Amino acid sequence: MCRVCEGFSIEDATALAGARVTENGGYAIQGVVGPGGPDEGAESWVYTVGLLDVADHPELIMAGVAPSTAASVLSMLCQSVVRGERYLVDETIDLGGAVAVVGAVHEVQYERDTFSTWYRLTSAGVLHSEVLEAVQIKLPIVSPTFGVLLSQPVLADPAARVWAESGELN
Image (cartoon, rainbow, N blue to C red; front, side, top):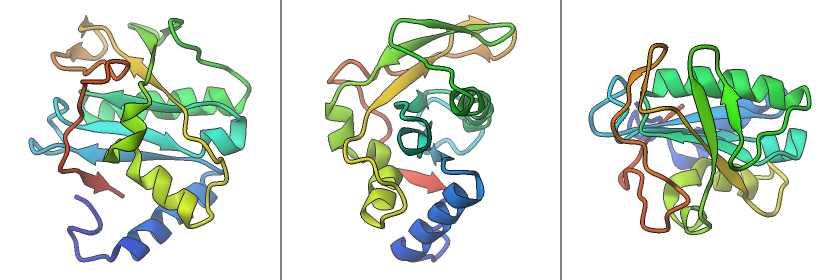
């Protein structure tokens, strides 16, 4: 559940997110749960905060995937980014049982609340990059590893939306 929903102030939720970034060596993974809850991925998304600072790499985002699956995949990818790996648009990533595709993220996504924790941490001085840049990690529609994925918005499309009334996980 989101920290603010639990009674935390925006400032306290931001401080906790900042502490996660610091404790994790400069980046963290932020989950946003859709109305179906944490087990339903269709309207949830998970993204990184801090890769721009720690590795000069675009932030990563997965949408329409169960938050636990997305967090697991992004955690693995973040570790490789910190070691020097780069994930560029239109490349594929072998996830050992599935092949993900790296997609663009349209700039309109940066104007919505899709990356709100990134903006709050930047405003708070925890993150220092001046311009947000992200890439989308898209899993195959069906894979033996991740099951059936029905609704992954293509964030390169300016009309694509992630759930608007977010409940951020902290």
